[in-house]
Length: 107
Image (cartoon, rainbow, N blue to C red; front, side, top):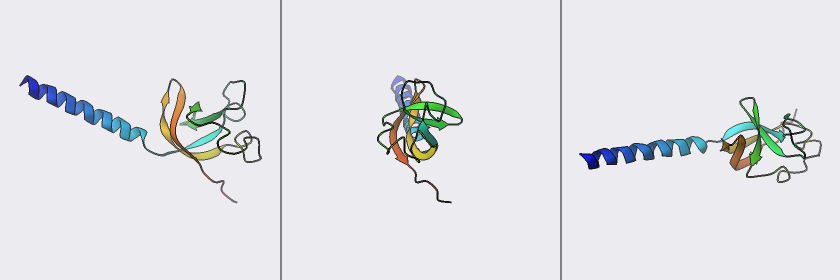
């Protein structure tokens, strides 16, 4: 009986962890920009940030210079762009495992 209860506990824990991992691997569409220039975050230089559900977070796992010239007319310091991301919020930062900047919509 004790072995059965242990087995059920381990199985349920594994299923919960697998579900959490699956939730963290969903692609989300977020707003991405310079945290200081566009999203109101405090800092000393231009850093990539995302806005999720109205709250802004600095990004870890990629940086502002990896996605073009931040100071160009369509760059992160001049505009807020849409991006596909996979990641999670840890210690008030968005730790990204996937980041794809979406093209600007033409009017």
